[in-house]
Image 1: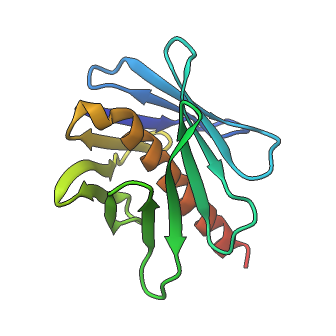
Image 2 (image 1 turned 180 degrees about the horizontal axis):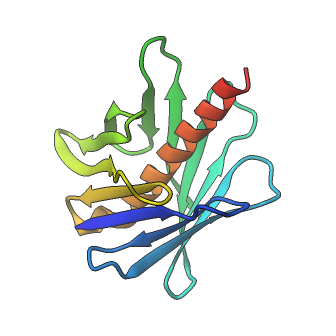
Image 3 (image 1 turned 135 degrees about the horizontal axis):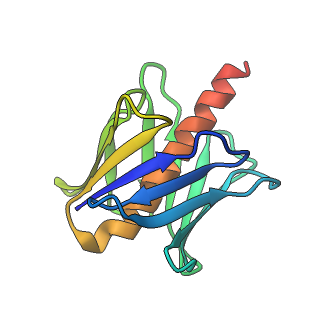
Length: 162
């Protein structure tokens, strides 16, 4: 199954629409304007919150938590390395690898691909394609990818401000 994440270009907060393969809206992602740390709410078409992503504010390296139904399901952490970006997904038996600068990476579980992520080029605003192997992993895979993107954006912002 495929999902497409499309970022709204002119918005004061993080705002994304997630489309399915047919181009129909499937999920909406919206950040909070005034908050300590980044917070993203993922809702379905009916407005029901399906996931919540929250940044740990006072942390040496960027760290985000993924909650589903009020339960912490994963923690995404950027690890300190000199030559490449390395992220860890704690709480799940998932590993992540690839080229994060080019937005071409994949998440696996014991060698089985859970989701592959690629950037769609020549679009108005950022657009990412998620190829999810098992529909049972859809919501968790989407939330983890959004958290990885938030960690990546936070790390880039921190690097740019120095």
